[in-house]
Length: 421
Image 1: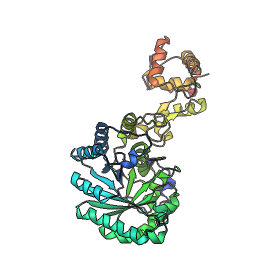
Image 2: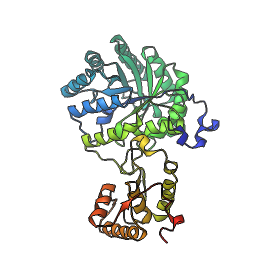
Image 3: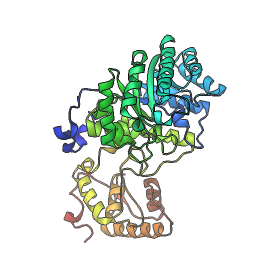
Image 4: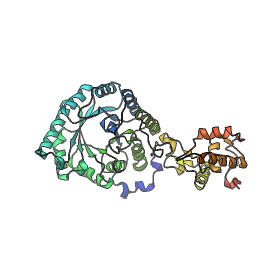
């Protein structure tokens, strides 16, 4: 079962979705272990962590990953780490990115499945003395070197979103014969979703090769642009775990995998329930934290605030067995946990929910007293503060409040039953 039923019905209007084939399967190519992930300023991954991340990406169903960063001069350690990952016997296809013939030979010698050749496509940025013809010839030569080595060879037009369409068309025509696939890259994250979709649709008229997309997040458009590209006919999306990457990063794997199902009704084959675990591992391995509100994998992405009006409504839905209907998707479907936040505005519904979901409850007066005690404790904190559920239960028990077993089959509790009066 996909997340599609949880999406807005407006998503499926013909005027919105256009010619999307719902039977398509979108391919994710993850670049966390390639230069694009490790190019984030200050980021470092040990060889052991790279192996563990590769294994986890494979285990959750990512069909393609890239290794071997620091193009065009990978270090000896990076080469050895890539060789180790290539020798793990993973089910996913493993490739690398390259800018030179040396790197292409290296990819073949390591035994990688494919190589993505990176070429700056924007002819407005060519150095003095170099022409568009030179760029086309250079690109074709690198692509042919990849094919001669038996690699699945993909051409990546870097900075495609700022390249003149007439030159981009000419460049793609020049490399098509030696290309298995083409990447349209928004290298500086400057495209809008509608502009990027238009470019992908143009590219599909210029080449018969499958289209991949590489979207940077410098103006928060990465996921939206990837989605628009899929509607425009792209079939492969580059991602990184937690959106790691240079400057503002790239398409976050976890966000795109969920969005593709929720908003397009398309499957990526990713085990969504394991996304949170992978994200947490990468946070620990890199030392790069994520926002508690980060979509899908943030610790409090599924946390309802302590506002009494909101928690009263959520508590009512919980008692009716309709809790998932107030969430963008069931939290457990993406490996997350729904929380009724416990903080400075703690109220009787906060207490009831957090006790009842742990098999306990109390009489009305005790519920109110617990809420007052929690508010007092929370008020002593500074900045952002949420008491986690284990801390809450420990606090309640240490304070000696009298709790009783909760019987979910008993008469409905809440305002209708006289609580809080």
